[in-house]
Length: 439
Image (tube, one colour):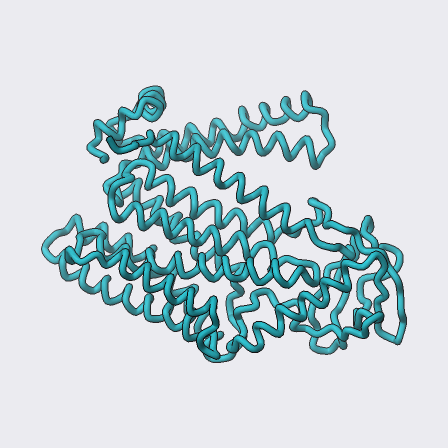
């Protein structure tokens, strides 16, 4: 007898996994030496420019915004603009990639000392005592943005998988979300570092990021083999995913001199394959108006977001140019794929799912939002629990519940399940998706 979990159990398990990812990534992001400064690049500056100083940090009163950080003076480690590079595999060659990781380790060792001498512009030398860890509140908005992007795509994928766990398309869709979550959450840690982190940790996170990227692309390309119609009985998905994982192994062992060969070229080939499969699917949907309408919407999401990200981020790197769209901001482009797919479920029943699937997720996430809102009020505003709970309930009554009710009425106009009590009971008892033919 095959184990079969009800949708709400799959969703709850997904939420627990996501919570674990948030906790682990936050721990790794704060468990680094911290000077309490925000650094930036300026081509007119020697070294790194101090953009902002945390008034509660170790550098407060010693360094000020506008100073130029030239070197870590004890070892005369001259600082370079490349030290702040967001994504190490943006280098074209593994030799440059490895040099960057080694330099990060050298900088990290200096920052981990009890006292640190810094050489500023004008031959000034100051001394600070870096904190052993970074305050949780000092994590930048870009860190949370990347985590949220990963959370959205992961939950979107698992939300579809929860109601059709045995179909190729929903399994592949869930795998794309899982791969993208791995890539974005690891990038969130090292791309928002203050200056440096442990080289071994940096390298491990980079490898996971690269694995997640290829694990996203493999299922991403494969999905058009199976949807809206299966093109052939050949097991295209498993073969292609295995090929991309083999590319990751080539990357791991640095078989080639260029990072492009195992990482970027396969992604380009995958995108071209996706367009080819789209043409085949378009031909198969000829004289099938419903299939053609579904395919139009699906291709709008699937090819649109992927093409924009590849064109603005990957292509410039292959041409040895600076990426037009940074990887961090690029996650938002990929998130639009999943948002458009969710809208397509409500409009065209993509993946043969009804619109109440999206509504069920809105209810689930709304409850989580209330809990998160309460926690934020307590931790950031220093409110006692009773006052925070009162404010949360007020916000829920005045903002969340009216918005949820409006969305529910909008989504359920043509649904045969119009009573929310029937929906909730069905989700909890595993009944609705059985009666609707979902297997």
